[in-house]
Amino acid sequence: MGSIYRTLTGGTLRDIALACLAVWFIGLSYGAIAVASGFPLWVPAAQSVLVLAGASEFLFIGIVAAGGNPFAAALAGLLVNARHLPYGLALPDMTGPDMTGPDMTGPDMTGSDITGPGRRWRRLLGSHVMNDESVVFALAQEDLPRQRAAYWACGLGVLLCWPAGAILGALIGSVIGNTGAFGLDAMFPAVILALIMPALRDRVTLGAALAGAVIALAATPFLPAGLPVLLALAGVLIVVITRPASRPASPRAPRPASPRAPGRAPRRAARRAAR
Amino acid sequence: MKDPTLVVAGLLTLSAGTFAFRFTGPLLRQRIAFPPWASRLLEAAAVVLLAALVATTALTKGHGFAGLARPAGVIVGGVLAWRKAPFLVVVLAAAATTAVLRLLGVP
Image (cartoon, rainbow over all chains, first blue to last red; front, side):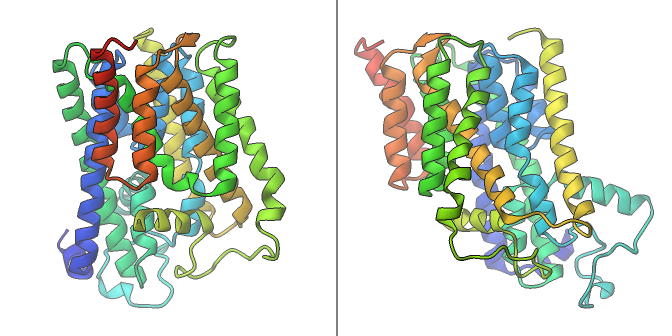
């Protein structure tokens, strides 16, 4: 870890710490909500470590708690997590050798020449700690060593803070008896609403989200739990229909070759995090 | 909770699938180009799913209406989030609104 401190500036480290603190707090509410929804402590605990992607875990808990099939819930969660695939395409290789080693100063350091078991573990763990925050912080750095240092610092920070918050929240939640009297059931939708609010400021996304919400609400009296939320995906059609209008004169750019030109999704996430 | 075995199976499916997404991106990076509109569509799909979850968990209980206290709290939280209030304020205001309404006898 010493190399992370040497590579990153104090400002970046402070920002990463703040982001991890926010993750810890959301984890706290997540654990409390999961227990209040009727799950034993091990469900949020196991999810926070194994899935390590907050929004999809909220979705899973919400659908199953409403009586939905856990596989339908997992499918919905996977749709939410599909964004990690383009993240990996937009990032340069984050799982190469040490951030500050002498072999890291060249212009084209993909690290693919390194092999062996250490490399394999680094790649497995490095994949697992890919999340919105670590991608955003990595893309904000100037060169590859700093990108790697920021990615690992934030990724490992989230790997610690998210489960720690979730477990503590679950412990607190199981102490509170009558969760309805404290309005904990209103916390769940409010948390998710707060998390997606930055994305909802985009008009097309807002239109799609509203359409999806109406579809889900209209279907709730008739369909088994869990399905209405999946049916809401039809709202995405609004994005498909309005796409040519919303992006008129930009010809499709080729995939950025340099790490300084990240893909669209991480850039939007970066803007989101900058607020 | 429902059948724990089923929940574990769903949980492991979600975990394994999510890891596969994370692992595949860097591997494919050298070989394919992911068009920007596809990223945008994925992002929109995630927001739409979560917005639908907000609507259903705020307004419904089982197959029926959840009562007024819960959606009122969510609306208060939503307005605060729109006005960029801190996350802690949003969450606590939502819970407090619902709690106070229930204390006053609103269902």
